[in-house]
Length: 183
Image 1 (cartoon, helix red, strand yellow):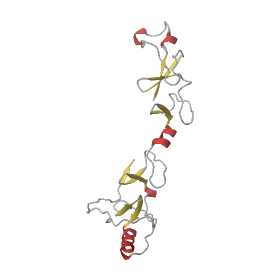
Image 2 (cartoon, one colour):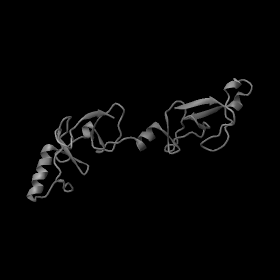
Image 3 (cartoon, rainbow, N blue to C red):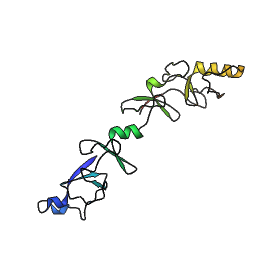
Image 4 (cartoon, rainbow, N blue to C red):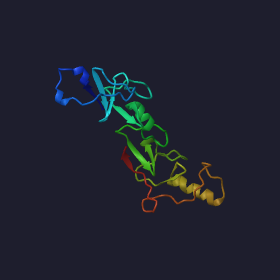
């Protein structure tokens, strides 16, 4: 949130002097003293000239009409902040909206429509048993098929999945079942 405050030098004799901040406001963006009519305040202690408060990515001016995010000393508009730092789907690499329901597997988060077996593309639903092998989701049937092929010495498809770990299921120690949650 960006607050707009009147500069004490602009108020002169007009303002309520009991509410004036002692000292001078210094712009975080350019380092100069702020003599403007308005001072933009981000967080409790970051003050900016209106012309200096811009998104570090797209250079959009940031003011009281848009949400402002600060990370590592840089300011961002909401769109760029979410694009750069927001949680992304492990399958499609797109972000989530606050209303999206998601599926989780270990540290990975998926859109519901992206939570599919990587072999047969069957959508995995809440309660389905699945395995996660080297970032690949496998339904129970394909996991079993891959284990059979592996023990028989046949080539395994997809080629880079070579794990003999058991299928995760609700009653087992691994406890990997599909569950739907909010972001």
